[in-house]
Length: 158
Image (spheres, rainbow, N blue to C red):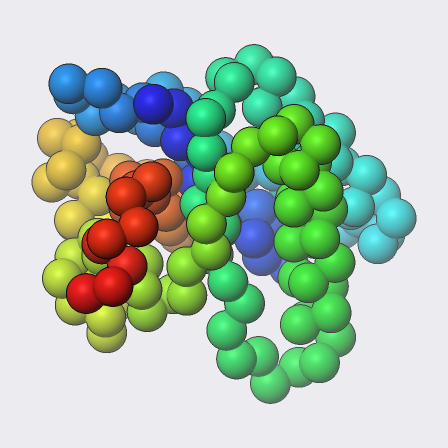
């Protein structure tokens, strides 16, 4: 199974492609860079780059981080609009997705819903057996999102 993890943000969107077979392997990861773009350019870039990534890797499913509390209403709106474009692309490509709160991601990847960024990164490194010190937090979070995806509904009832 190939899983796409997406961490939507205001400035950039982290993404990761993880292949889960007998072994878990990180196929690709990076940023869709949208900082400095007008809102129209931002939404178009998200649509185009995410479509390209999906066409290239053909994921079976996707994990997206849910919006959590933002003090700034404009930030919430910008992230929400980007998430809408992400969901549109996934829907048009017939890719099922699950959404996770930041706390759920932390709990499922590290066992601690209050884990900090470093603890999440270390958990990702442990699972994949690689060092990710040089990756941006958005990318590390996207990897974590891809790793925690499960099509087994029973894990969500715990």
